[in-house]
Image (cartoon, one colour):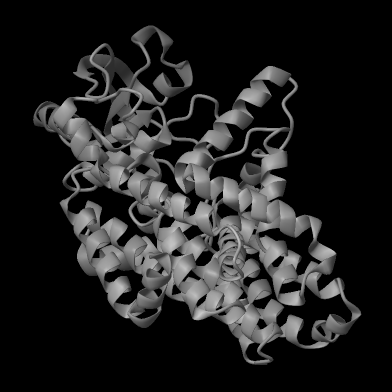
Length: 497
């Protein structure tokens, strides 16, 4: 049965991609889920185009800026690039797998990805991951063409794709690093270091220049943020670390699906153990994914690892797994894995409806809570602002709280105002501390929104205004047992840089 589907996919790939594109687009436009904090945060970045930002390179902001310039500042428009990038990803996944193995293996690789729940998130939530996945796969395809199809121009195209991936997320630096390792493994490949590899590096290095320049002007904040993700905490016990690792593995089981995750790990482990006996194309695949995937699993035993860090490393592992299937291995297990995977995908698509029907809100089976109440919260703040402006005249808004509140208010308030953030630590902990504060609002009044009580408001914030007083509260739509406090800061005197 699976063989028949693989043949059909190979022959009718454009039709399958069109169906997938339509399903994903319709789901995106009919969904009532708000932007999560990261999405609105990157949207806020897109309103001020730059060469880099506090925590990430600029690609996600550039893409959102292009989308909203064409379609407006709407939830579905912000997310639409995920569907386009996901479709390009599938095209290059098929082409790359076909280049390494065969059309049958390429069809299986596409079906495997479509059977993994992570691809729903990657084609719905507009974060740094969708562009990273797309450009990562493009780089793998062109590197195959350069290394094994002997197409000299492909070196430069691979470099461009890698540069785009690097402009999406810093982890793409692993592509040139692992490529260099591959070239150094065999003396016969050293010839590529003199010409092909240099052409590959040219656009990669050029993409680094604006990132480094921007960081040199902003106290290297992106590098400091990235460094903060690594390191063993002395305050975390061994049992706690094991618990974090178990949570990471559980996250992988849910995103990849249980059987397919186990198969990927088994194939990756086997390939890594046999690395020196593999043919060069398979060595390349192992270095570009499975080896890194196993490395992330080991890193999780030493420190906290984010669940999405491992995603790009699955791609070449899936290509290897598809090649194994065509060679006659793992056939029964893969069929079971596909069935379970597609069941989990269908359940994931249906979950928002099931949560509504059975009233599972805020239960353990509700992963959509992060997508709720942002628009409702913004409407409450907007109403409070208008009431205050009727008495005091125009005000600007300051949030003392998480950066996600700032960006979600900015996106969902009807006029998309500039929202400012006060960080009580005095440190640069988000893009809002990189940007100038309300320095043009000297002499104006501010509406301050926070969960802090009147007694705990920091004196440095009060000192910035001639007077500071509580004017009311707002219900917290996400928590009936909590509320937000509203304060009026009259006549801003200064705002430090």
